[in-house]
Length: 306
Image 1 (tube, rainbow, N blue to C red):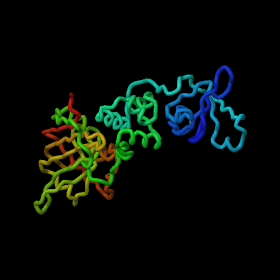
Image 2: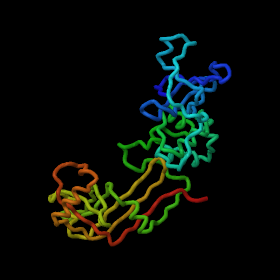
Image 3: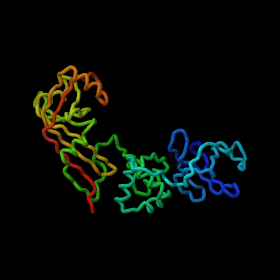
Image 4: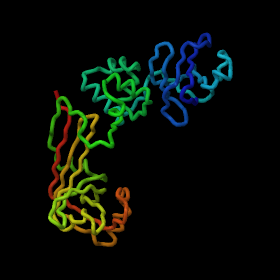
């Protein structure tokens, strides 16, 4: 079974073959148009997640002009016999939008049923959004934003052109210290961090750089004449953080330790091969600096347990 946005989903009565329910497909979860679908039912105007069973077929959007209403084109193919609006089961793995929806709902003291009623969708579908890495349609996001008194941009984690920190703090935040092990976990692999250096004229500077973590060392590449190169052969501070504006949560980790220039040719080639991405700033940046932390500290903002 395959469909496009705007097509109708027709559910027939097993006894008579007549349509007993129909709705507009307003959301697709797979690019090839296979189920499940988000359907706005004509009898309730409610949007639910549907896994069509054998009693369902698609009426394409263009069919309304090309054929009589009583001659729907049957679309053949495999159909999963799952009751409508029942999300797939499995280990929860929420996406960013689902986490933001769940936290905003909990922040306002709303149940899933109350929120789903406000957003005119089924509680099962709201549970699916909160617990799975779903990709809801714009219509769904608009309804959720309205139900939660927020914006679509906030639910999507928007505001890339704004300085961080313009969101709202949690109603009951808790600031907790992170253990060195937790700090290592948060900064492991790669990302963007900030190295604190003293420039040639004695002025302090904080420079963002792409970094990787290799054998417990923080490494980044730069140009020999750059400000970031001034970190070499000194004890420096290196900071990494993350702030989720919509959730009001975040963390920061500070690593302190000696920085050295990587000079071994084999190690330099290995680092270049393993690097996740070229430097975002572009240009020739072939000087690798390694920071081996002697101190790892961090803090995290989370909702207080009540």
